[in-house]
Length: 494
Ligand code: ZN
Image (spheres, rainbow, N blue to C red):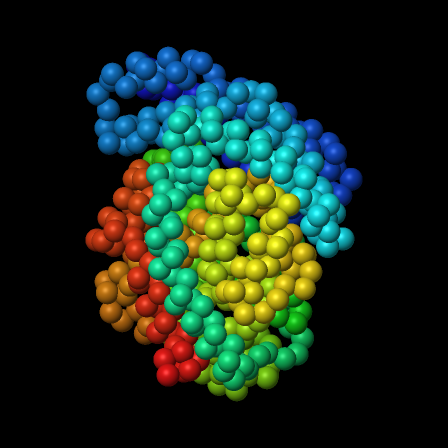
């Protein structure tokens, strides 16, 4: 057979090994014996080395050159586009730079954890400066004369440009700040009281993943310190966590991860173990988790059903009636930590990280000045002061892990979710009557057809444009947030 088939057979094995690498990480976070850590890191290192050698194999270049001369289907062309993209990327980064980055990120994540523990940003600044210098070098190699930040962003959101995000995010910021101000000045929402048995939480979590259409015959739900979803095709696993005083942590982490996992499970099986067989970008992935968690899972209709399930599971927990429960689920309150933030303030967190990392990468902000810049921006957008660095610029692992260009995909995901939600509600006018019965089936079927089944076939922006019939914009998200939180905190519209 031709070069295309040879290339795809080779690619399939690489994808299979990459799935195994992912499953090793899942194992480490869930069931690995504590004493196995050192051996596991050697095992994972060996596998990653094999993957690196396969991905930079010059034979790929030869196959690509002859395969691109063959007549190919739409799927085949898309496969070549993905393979070319990652091959070119691997070629552009010199081997010694890739090795230096791997070494430095391992060291700096350790230094970050220590600095966070000690609330010592000054001690961490030189470490951040080193990782930033290496990432900038890598960005310059990848950009090949183009914009360095765009090259970093492209790793997580292929085709996205900082210039587009700039205008999207600038348009969101004033509205988000206004909603935050109104809510924090209003009467606080009711909150749950009591102790929530963690086995009962897990039973509810298992019910919730089925509501989202998650296929338990091709997945499993376990506990881990940090909730995540991993794998694709016929083995997509979810983890969640329980906190005895806060049942919403488990419920909404579970819905979020189920959104990610159902996306992977819903991709056309013909794409399994090929470059098209996974979610197309971080932003699109996050749109699928956020729409399940927020636009569907935190809706008035769905929370009405959830309230009854919670009463069944936990009895009286201090919330009287569905409206009070809806307000409790959607409470906006003060806080410093991104991962604990609500739908409004979460995006303020991301906008701030985006501006700061852009300034760091451009050289307009020195790592030594990051803490002061963070604290100023936080006070401007959130309205109160950051007391210690662990609640400020040391809270996220991302930068120490060399993840520059990653943060904006979270808000981009929310923006895409806003676009998809407005389209889906038009397509399914009685959606709320289904959600009120705890039935997400029509919504999930729509998402599967419009977005999920395509895997990597279309570039992210094109995929969302096809699904919605309009180019992605921040407007639907802002309208959704203003309608929802304007009603919950009426001062917002006074
Ligand atoms: Zn997510």
